[in-house]
Image (cartoon, rainbow, N blue to C red):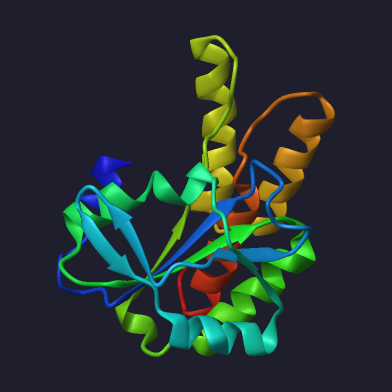
Length: 189
């Protein structure tokens, strides 16, 4: 993760849309956001961009979470704080990761960005769990190829097939799919 974040320019980003899966069932099937004015870490405070959150909420219901125990967002914050000079955060927790929910959330994010060229979209996810090293590397490579090919449907299908085989391939497949859809809408190839 640090190697990826290190490729960023410290001053090119004003807004970070941070998407993570809901591991703890805090969101009742939709999209949630922790109710903080700022997110405090040992490295300092990160302001939440509530203006943009409200624009998202006008198009897609958000569940405001009074208590946040989800680690999938927090784990990315030190990387962002060490890499970026000044930014506001839009932290979204996905309680549902269906293909339709991913497409819809991506559409709303893209439609509500103030300045897409100064926004960074970050999907938080582990990859495979509980495999020996060669198996984990092969499974992770397959998962990563879907992301690199901007194939959100393939990624979601691959992870769902793994789930049916009782294989944890990517807890944040939905957030990754949202970022793929949004990136494509913004012109990524």
